[in-house]
Length: 237
Image (cartoon, rainbow, N blue to C red; front, side, top):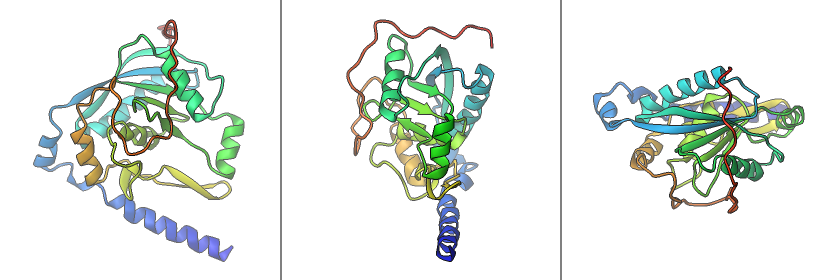
């Protein structure tokens, strides 16, 4: 038990040091702000199973958009909201269902919102489980299992960073891992490292309909289509 406690203390200390190596203290610099221009507006297609209200999602996306705008000059503009149902809640089936459900719509990123089931939440607290994911084919389909800004921004970061999967500091560190049940170790920084910011700016103008060249592919989409897109949300919130 003492060794486990020491390991936790060491990990927390390392996390604090790693999270500090970010662009957080550079964002008021005039050159930094100039590099963020022009601002790119990402067209977001929102898919939800009803776990969150539209107002909750709107507020969440607005907060995430402001954080990313300050760092790299990219904002999130939700264009449409569609219903989605997940028959299989594993990573690839959820990403493929999101891809099928959004066929026929024009957008840059599609973000699917859901909430952990009771079983998933228990698994997460016992041994750890994924909180968000993005496909490795187009890097444009994202699923998140809670309204956590770091989780979503981390996945959006993957949509512009192709040379590596994760980093040693900042936003693109792995999201979390589990050592002791019910005590997840989370990396909380919402700020990119300087190196990751440079790559995001480099790929800022990417076209999402094109398959990017990335270092490694894990969550590859099958070639599946759907005859028509999922229905839009009703205007009632």
